[in-house]
Length: 316
Image 1 (cartoon, helix red, strand yellow):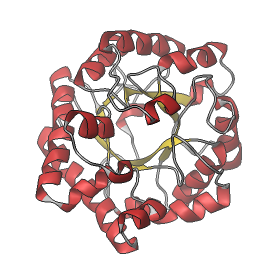
Image 2: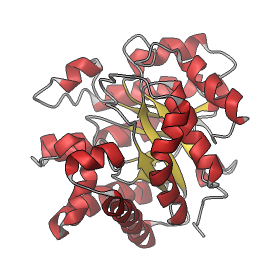
Image 3: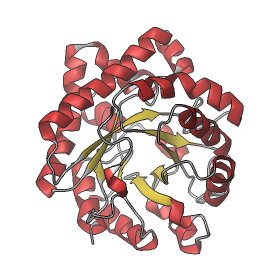
């Protein structure tokens, strides 16, 4: 039985500050290490001992930061692209994807055994991504289609020792709903994480409140909480200031280092790492707007400097 599946420690009333996360995996590997990640698929690194070592070093560096800071950390498996459509593009059939998803969890289990302390619990989250392009979606995915499509990856994580699932960079509410329904069917906690454009809306045009309400109303509030990722605080601060009945359900943020739009980032040839200290300050402002914040970390362009700065302000 997974260690934390039934009692996610980031939700504990005893925590003294939000958990942290790792930084931007894909941007670190591509821009800082010069690696090739076809279709932004980091899970392919698990195919070689060298690639496994790259992943281990990446995760271990953040686990060490958490241990030094005496703060909990959530680490997502590098499996954002490890689903059927993307797997087909990469030459992976269903069995190969299943092996990759399980191997990704097993690596983090080994890392947890080495780095976790009582003061720095380590939560393992199986990461899934949208069926389409999270940066430039071409068509909406309906709830039933999403449930059927994502069920295989979700069921694999349910059989593993992952504590939870993070559904990252979601572009519309219906796909999130389908994912949650698939997770409920196998008793797995799943946190939908929406990406937002510079106007604070999902790429679908939905407001954040509309997307959260869609999922909560249809599932009886099944997700433990909701998250924003792959967006800069400047893009959605106003949305949080305006608030709404949905606001207490938003309890996690993984911010981009850059305040550029998705289109600008998608076409960039160099890394925009922004200003780590300024990002920390901006996330600190968000933490005052989200008193129930349980997770504050980084997404594209972020590294240890950004995570350290975020923890420095988010802990209060």
